[in-house]
Image (cartoon, rainbow, N blue to C red; front, side, top):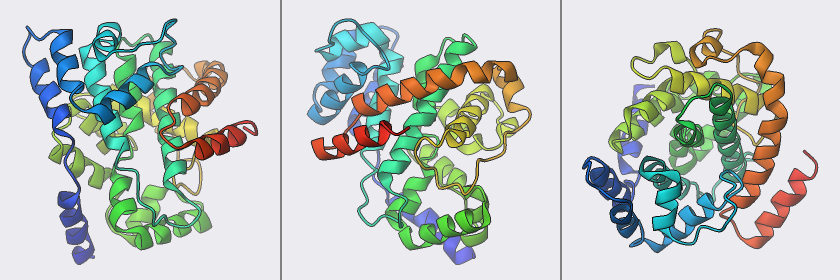
Length: 298
């Protein structure tokens, strides 16, 4: 088992680093005199990220009445911190590309689940009147980045994990412990540290299954944990779980959500998910048509 753990750690260090544009934007935001045009100038140097970022900002998630056509305008509308987080999101999404997918569980299904958790996280943040709605969206989007390691480098082992979870009706994390002795949250934490992500995101990735263990930002993993359970219960995408994961009893209290709030959130999450998955599509036209067909049956 120790050999398997060593292989996982080695593979994490082989994964590509995040694009230089993310580091440069992060560095800029440490300077209190940085302007929106400074941030826009750096982002605009990368045409791929620019295109995807504008698509994100013009999605139904934001609902701006007029089309946002420049990065400078995007930064002005959503704020520099939110744009930095969206640059991170688009960079991470580019890693979801492995063609050797483990069985019926696909990267597209994983992306749908990640997006569902992002949407649910932002809906919950709005419901509890948290001012950091966009940060929760990104935290939800990348909460399972540890699974990138399995997708990219251990597809056969991960197929075994999915089979164990499905046949025994287990959460994916429990099946990982049985098959790999190493979980996606531990892999994700190591990857997030290597990428030097903000501490709130590292804690979300590390503790979204057990938010009471978070030291400094417990509300982030707690809120994403609740969003993750809801997304699984609503069958939005596929997370690899063989059952709906259990809700940590302290999570609702930490994020300030009452059980009576949840039924009112479900229709909003459902509608926001349908809108966002179409507008945030980074796939070709045939795949988008397939997704539209799938959504018509939800």
